[in-house]
Length: 446
Image (cartoon, rainbow, N blue to C red; front, side, top):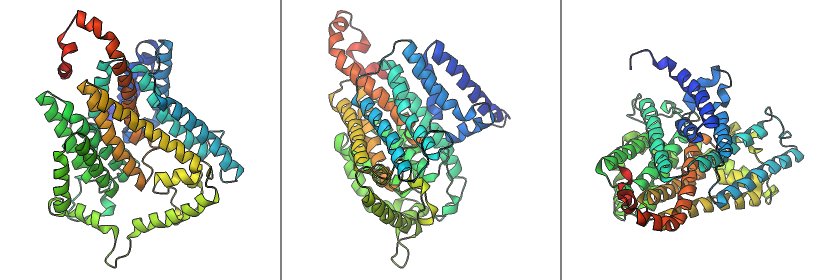
């Protein structure tokens, strides 16, 4: 803005964490959740905290403060099988790390200087976000606020992504011009986040009734899709197409026609650099280009490793410690990595978790009468469809930056499901004292 104050933004944000930690513990933990949400994906902003005391742990501390503050006030989790699945999953992954130790593939997972233990600890922060959100989101107003703050958080990521991407000339595709993005882990990670939440708000959009909110949501979706396009991630492109297909099947059949037309004419309407990126899977000799060939080589090696121990795998977080093609530390397919590290048992728990997430989303979409809850349900279905596809091309699941906000929304969905089920019991009281909000759910977006 040219004021010179931008230098102080990280410090103010850091101090804000300490304020919200205190607020969460002594007053209202919901405010702490609201505050941390924009920082979940914005890793580059959080990295500025590293120069301050406990700067690298501010997010973790605030999440624990929200949970502790909620328990102090007697708040309870809504009923959901997702909590049980996560508890089983976390325990299994920890035991799986000891298997890796027994096989001589990793150190004992005991201390913060053990790579495998740190990997597990960072992953477990994701279900803790879900627990924190589920505890403190207790009513319809909080659910509405969560969706709104998610939109604001996405807008920040859109802005940062577009500013980085459009600072380059894209007359032709150039891998060296791809920026890591505001999530800090690479362009493909940012792309997975953008595709996922672009689809969430596209699914949420049909249930907004007021024109100005609808227009703002259209603008947010358009900005997100533009940012996704300039990440040059082929996996993200496919994720968007699948997300749009799901929305078309479940809500807007016209989208299926638009999707079919786009697939026929896309090479004529997308920028040249995007077309080059999509078409570079094979080189002029008909052979796979370097990144695609790397994936094939990794999967072939992973298959041999899986067959060595198909039931329980080789131990969670061990793949990153081995020697692989071009010194890569990831299988470039999350499902393959789950199979290699945790075996068939780990895959079963993983698919159980995904099934429960889809079940909760479909339940809200098909059974809720409130447009807010229906929009939340369809948005999560589209986001999950995008997420499932993205993970075929790399680990897009264990990054808090990608899925943190998604789990906040699932916490809201779990509470919405409970509110939806208890609503009939409250109907007599509402009928006795009717109001415009109670008889007309469309007034929710005032």
